[in-house]
Each structure stands twice: as structure tokens, then as C-alpha cells.
Amino acid sequence: MPTATTKTNTNAVVSLCFGIVSLILPFVGLLVGVIGVFLAKSALTQIEQSSEAGKGIASAGLVCSVIGIVLQLLLIIGGLSLVFFSIA
Image (cartoon, rainbow, N blue to C red; front, side, top):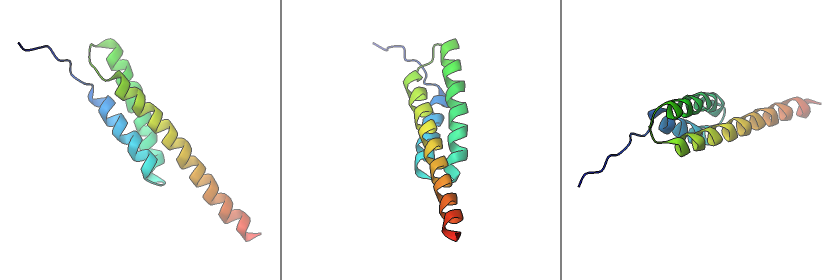
């Protein structure tokens, strides 16, 4: 007996992938994280309007992207502070 399956939102899956990549790649992860946030927000909006699955995936993508952005900013600030304060 076949059961009806709902389609998972594509933006949700892509946002999770971008969120994970933003945690791993230095410097490039900042840009990837920002894109991941926008994709996750878009996915959550699309999921609310339709009956697609993937709300948890989109939420995880949003969390990973935000954490990736924060880590990348800390990395950049730390690197810049090393450069500027090691000169003095």
C-alpha cells in the first residue's frame, strides 16, 4: 500500500549544506554562511506557505550558518588583532 510522501524543501537542504561548510572553511565560510542564512529564511517561509517537509532541516541550516558567521568573524578579528598588536 503506497503512502503519500511530502517533498523536502530544496532550499532547506542547501542551507544546511552551506551552514556546515561555513563552519569548516576559513574566510570563505563568512560569505557561505550569509548565503545559508538567506536560504534558510527563504526555506522557512516557503515551508510555512506550502505543505513541504524540511522545517527542522532549515532550522538546523540557520543555526549552523549563524554559528559559522560568528566563528568566521572571531577568526578575522583575531587575525587582525594579531597583525596590529604584534607590530607595537
